[in-house]
Image (tube, rainbow over all chains, first blue to last red; front, side, top):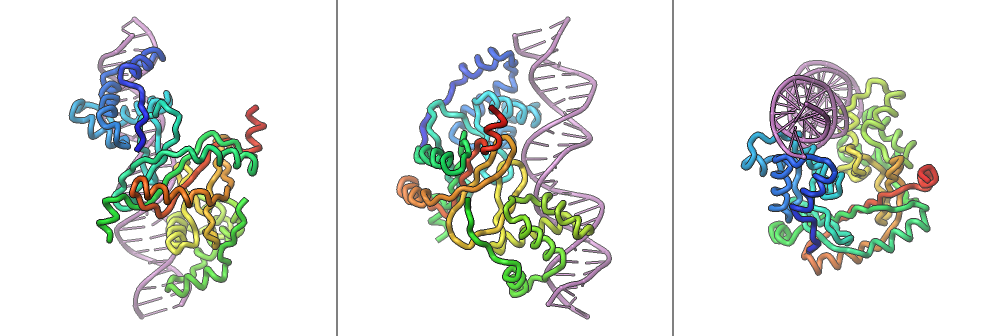
Length: 151
Length: 151
DNA sequence: TTCACTGCAAAACCTTTGCATCCCC
DNA sequence: GGGGATGCAAAGGTTTTGCAGTGAA
């Protein structure tokens, strides 16, 4: 399981202020919600539901705009797991690529570390003259729990 | 570049009939359009536009339903390149996995062969107890043409 | 005070669905 | 003729946008 660290609350708040973004209570709440759920891959709607308790007046559009902003700043990473909505997670400080194991039965997303692909990118440039700047690897299958459920 | 063969028009038509699906002129037109554009990764809207010339009364819903059907039969493969719409291509007869090189500038999708990942799936099962049944690998970067445009 | 940010509602997109009609087999 | 397939329009789900009002700096 990946254990890379991400920026902490204070650092992120400073970064917002230093870029002349306002540190509104909505943004603070969303950020804290992410910190409290850093193990999960939350969708905008997930964040919205979680945040509603603490901040009932939060608008869904604000959640979308905040997630966009944090992704643009590189604080969050936007993922597409093929379930028709974007899911976000903290960007890790270390540069290790990690990939996603998506359970076809329950949809659970776990993670997997890998550096194997770095060498592949060199091969691709030689073979296809395609300059790789990022890759996106998903493994689809069945998590341990669902394997026993299904058989 | 991948050069795997796919089923031909006649074989596909037979397959439809044998599964008690009707070979309507709409389905024939869509199929032929795909054959004439087999190098490209077409979206439903792409197909709809292409088909409109030959069959002006075609409905967009029919395109979606036909693409769904062909994907269910394994004739087409549904891809998600992260541009907010599904894109389809013929399923290759050979079992070689091929992956997609997506240009961040012009959106062009080219292909890349690889068998390296098969061994990775074994590692994943040992490490994560996650039973991989499929994987999805995308490389993002700049195609040869755009590399010269950008610099 | 100012101007970025917010909430709300409406719109934008892609895709699916309901239904009356059509037409392949 | 029957039942799957079609076209149309409406609805669905996620995300974006317009706008008037709000509030952080």
